[in-house]
Structure formats: C-alpha cells, structure tokens
Length: 88
Image 1 (cartoon, rainbow, N blue to C red):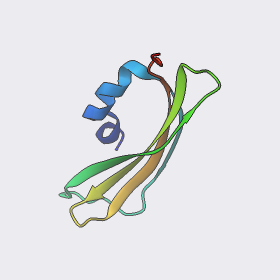
Image 2: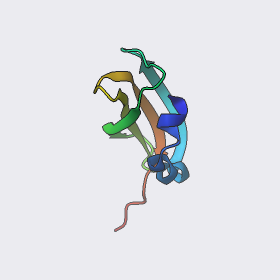
Image 3: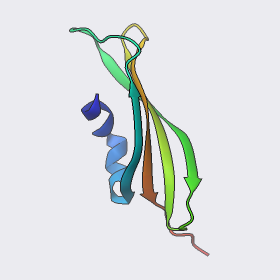
C-alpha cells in the first residue's frame, strides 16, 4: 500500500514543495487476495493556509480499489507544503 500510494507520478510533482508529513490515517475495510488487480484513486480532501504565508497544509484521501470495485485500503495523508509565491 505504501509504495502504491506514495510513489505515484503525482508525488513526483509534489516532492520539491514537500516539507513534512503531519498525519496519516489508514484502514483496511476489505481484504486483498492473491491475484487481485488493484488501483488507486487520490482526491484532495482539504487545503488550508497556515500562520506562515509561505506554507500550507494539503490533505489527500487515497483509496485502493480492487477489480470488484471494493475499497480495500483507505486513508488520509496530511502534508505540510511550501506554497507558491504570491505575485503582485
């Protein structure tokens, strides 16, 4: 699960801005079996500013789904990220 959800192409774009992992929640509501085909769906669950204007917090909801459409792993990752400079 970890490699499937953390080594995705999306993370390649985030890595230069990533400052830290703030929280991670994960559960396995259904089993995964040998021979299953699984995929990952990632959505931005929340974004918010911090007291420091150059930083922000992003929360991603990640779901691992098998070939039957069942969620086998789900979780939320909360990341501290560097924000893009505000141009004027």
